[in-house]
Length: 157
Image (cartoon, rainbow, N blue to C red; front, side, top):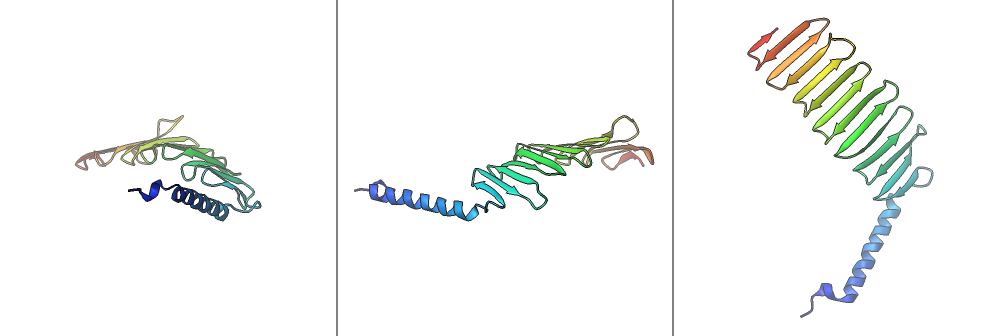
């Protein structure tokens, strides 16, 4: 007894139909040359309204975007790096959303799943924040001074 899949005619028709579907999809998702270039699912390049370009490699996993405000690049979910040219801020996500590192003007912060948080203002010892949610909280700033809390039972109000 012969199975249908081993028939050479069926295999040939299957390959031709799969290639036809792939070509149709390529034509449908490829933007016109005024918008950019696409080699879907491997590479997409778009020209945005503000004149910047957006490039994606193996979307939605690979990403490269650059414009006048900043750039983003990464290989999701392993890492993503964002830079803002205007505020000179940067973010680095590693194994998103598990770890995040941020640097803004004079502040540096780190968090892990928003359960472990650490923020400080460098070049000064006046502002610090550390928390292990919901166990421990410590905060120090110029306005309120230093305060801490442990399990919402013990602390310095």
